[in-house]
Length: 270
Image (tube, rainbow, N blue to C red; front, side, top):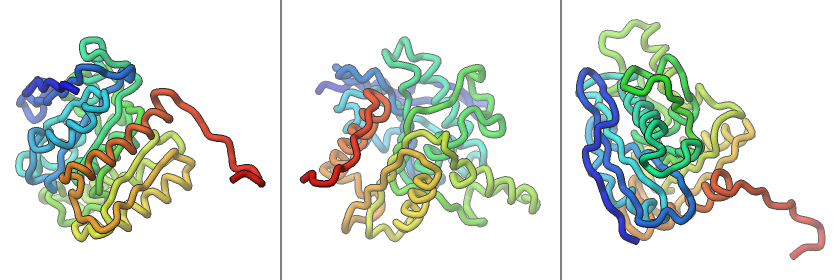
């Protein structure tokens, strides 16, 4: 399918400067009318919205309007600047749903590693006054319909680059609470998929497995796909990125696009 990319579209502001996104538009949305907002990885000290073109492209090929968002790195600003920027892009997407040709209630988030943390916090804490920021479209909801998190950086250390400088114990406690997806788990959490490689030594598979179990215990529609024998950022390999996108496509279809359930197994069935 033909995909057009509109680069460096302004979606808001952060820290007194403009923030931009890349819009990947499929020639045919295949009746989905949905958008996915992407957040790149890089440990919050590296990476950018252009570095994930290929990973975004596999979802655009499936008919989704895909938006790769810029967010401020820790070298420019500390937490909560990053989630402020992420939420500003979600709000901008909803505010511009008509121009993008999407349903404002069909916006999902996708994040990789550090961006996975942003996608999870955005999913779990919609319209949270402490996290929204003032980057634009403040009257618009930041709620999302679904979340995909690839090998997410769920548990940040006290020495993490995002940790507030010269912080008091109270500031550190607030940072740990605000930046942890665990804080926001409830039955209201949107349908979520976690992807993780079994040989990931950067972020252990167990962090995603534990979080999946936490979501499941809360009654959240959730899946965990543990990809055998692959390391961190495994989806940079095209065939693995495509396979995960197809799993995500099916998940989004049955939970957001055309919601449905499946009958339980009956004794005697094969």
